[in-house]
Image (cartoon, rainbow, N blue to C red; front, side):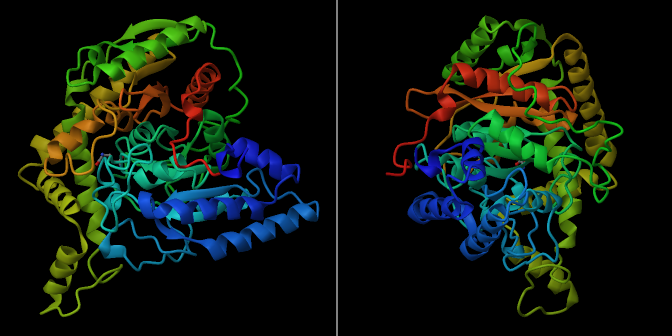
Length: 494
Ligand code: GLN
């Protein structure tokens, strides 16, 4: 099998057995990038020299018989809102176009300590605001399954890159679905961990109480491998959960445990939601039937506040964003307007010229929701609704071990189809944002194809800090299906 088609697990195995060097792996993926980046546009920065140098160091360590870490030689691509000292971190925004951070994000440190090799930084919706990657201030990313379609967002670059096999795995971030939605649109797997499981230190903040970093890859086992490295307590993120409260498990150990007796919740309110593509409904039905055959038991659960989730999310997320983005003032970070009239103009023109339309829309919405006269009516009310949504899940997880749901109401839509109507775009997140409001983990895995050959995703939601069970359910499903093994035509290396 060609190197670029290998899963991370198999690639690491071959490197460990010295059947393949880290340098071979890096060269193969760099070649794939060279060949396809022009059509896909998944990447903002490619790091060939850096990657080659790291690969040679790792090969040397292995040749010397030293332990080079659990991910030794594994090429990985990370979303460009994760700080890297060795490469620019743009957030796909003009305002940070030349920004080179003075430090590495926690996840970057962890990956490098484990021997992984960061080969590129991926495109995203500007500051992770969007569902299609069309809000990038740098480029448009295309879906490898159909280049007329979006890859989903906001981690569209990270997802498209894995689907096009530019790397076996990548990192994305998920504030309202931004790992799970692009994973679904691009036919790969993607996990949003529990809030607090992975340190956000060095992740450029969007909605701080919602943001989580997570892996994307072909299958659940590749995701477990990366989770083992990036998760765990970090004192530099005060919301990072200490080991004493929730010890970090080995995510690989439970994968092969049979599902017998697992209670799978089917959400009553999702059954009646209109506007969902019947092909997606059919794929989810088939998946739940397969789970029953595997020994799982289906139970109906209710999430009665589902209908308020989108409104609640767009108040909380924009409120937090408006505050987080106040730091881009033309003085502290990034872009500054060239000829300001006075010091007020430094702020206003730098921001006016540096931010894109969607970011401005959200800053205005968030500032409005937080302003003195409207705080109680909007922001405070949204916080109360958020608590109810959280309680809905707590109740549901008394009856079910995991919840099975769609990821999005449609498959990948066409580039440009929703850009003129932000509200329709916001509705793409209807099945994903509740998990962020509640803080629970969720994974999206490939579960079929539509008539026009676009991937369909299946979402599995888990209880707090129970990533192991959704990874197990995902992996068991993948033992009985082969949707996750499909690579879009044209991306299989000859
Ligand atoms: N589409 C959602 C938004 O625009 C989610 C984005 C995300 O998860 N980063 O806010």
